Structures are given as structure tokens and as C-alpha cells.
Image (cartoon, rainbow, N blue to C red; front, top):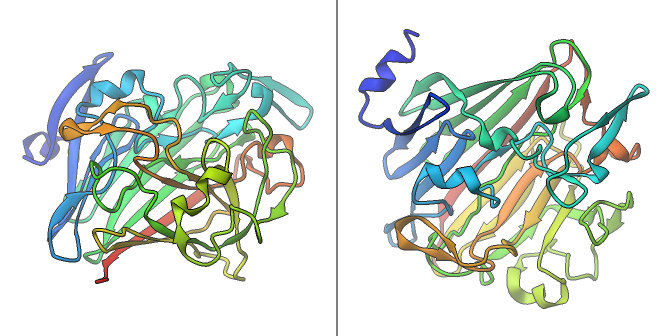
Length: 353
């Protein structure tokens, strides 16, 4: 309680609503011109303010005008998603001979943890310093959205230097083995959240394979190379250069190349054509979901923006989708006594034409 009381007095924390009696707040992290706003509703990123190549500040993530808008949301703007991010085929899986049937929320499948996943709960603020970090915690209970076992979870957002954002997601099962695959679901537009589409952004993915999917976006279990296909971003090219050859746009898990490092691997580099902003991403996870905002249809965003198809792109570092049903994929099962830790680092710079 002693840690929480000062938050009420800080101008950077504004109470914006109440859900089931719990207070929801907005919190800011800032160093110089680099600032981030977050909310404990879904442990969500609401804004990231960065200078462009001319020093002009702009917000480079998509979000809603109010946190209340997240209650009926299906975009997952900036949310932490889990207990298992992405899809579980048939909304079911087994662990050690025990079968678990979940409640589907994406056709017959489960998406991003269920109808009320981690992006739809109010997290506690465990620790906060506005020039340094904020830590959110959530005690996921046995049976939450059908998942087994109690699972204390924490997410820490931290400023590193004046141009890096670190994200650390941790969980430790208390009493039962359970799948854990937590992801950060920010939508990025490096030219500014209201600037239009991201098709002119250039991207390089340090991933030479994908896990192909069926018509319901459930992995087939294969792992195939991208060389010579529209999915090949091994050398930088515009996102829109071959998107017409990908039905529905990009929404696929890439297998991050193994660099031999036990810790961080470089996942992606992205360049905004107009702004000159560059974003680099590192992670310790084996996969990254590259999604180009294909389902955005006249979404009312913050500052009067209207987000249309391809208005933002996601790079969701993760375990492979539906790993619980594919023994050849890296396992997501974490047992009591083990810990789950997912770390990401974003680095932001600018460059002239």
C-alpha cells in the first residue's frame, strides 16, 4: 500500500474509470522527448511519443480515445495478451493425459487467451517510477478462461537510456503445469498513428522460415522456408511490395533465426519512409507474429483518427501458435518450480533520406 499511495498524488497518473469497483489509471514513463503512456487495464501501451528525423514529436502506436473503448475491443491495441497468446486450435489441448476444453472465441478456436484474457483484466501496480519503470501484476486463477493452475504474472515496462523500451513478462505456476505464452500486442506506425497505412514502411525480419496455417489461421505443423515467396523479408523491402500476393495480408508466425545466443536475438528492423524513424526489436522468444492490421475497418482511434486497413503493424514475439497441439514446436508448458520469462527490447533511432 505504501508504494501505491504516492501514485494517487502524481500528475502523471490520471484515474479514468472504474470497472467492477477497481480503479483504472494512466501512467507515464518519460526521459527527455521519449515518453510512453500505459494503463493497468490489460497492462496496455496507450502511446509512444518519439521525435522524427526533423525533431518533430509524434505518437507511433494505435489506440483508442478512452480506456472504456477496450471493454468491447477485438483489436487488442497495445494489450498484454495471454495466458496463451495467438490461437489454440479447437480451443483444446492435453497435458500429461489430462484434457482441457476451453471456451472458443474465434470460431471454434481460442484467440489471445479467451473472451477475457489478460488484455481484459485490471492489473495491480506493483512498482512505479516515472523516469524508470512500471510493473503490473495479475494473479491468474486456476480455471481462468479454462486454463489449469494458479499463475502469478508480472509485466514490467522499463526505459533504457533515452531511446530504448524494455518489456519483461514473467510467470511462475503455483500448483499445476500449464501452457504460458504471453505477448505484447502494440500496433506500430512509425510515421505517426494517424498518418495512414504502413505499406511504405520497410521491414527486415531476421527469420527465414514460417509456420504455415490453414484457412482458420491454425498452424499445420509444418515449418517451411520463406525464400522466393512474398513472405521473404530477409532483405529490407516495403511491406506493401507483395502484400497483394498474400490473401488477406500478413498474419503469420515467423521462426526467428537461431544466432546461437541463449539470450536476445535480433527479430526485426523497421523504417518509416516519411518520418525517418527506425525501430529495432530484440527478443528471447522463438517466434514473432507479423500482422499488418488487415482487420482494421474504420476503427475510431485517439485524437480523432480513423484507422483503416493496414493502419498499423504488429510484431508479437512469442512461442509458436498452437504449440500445445504440435509436439514438434517448442513447448509452452511450464510446470510448478519452473519460471517463464519473455523479454523484449525496442530501440528507436532516426535517419535522414
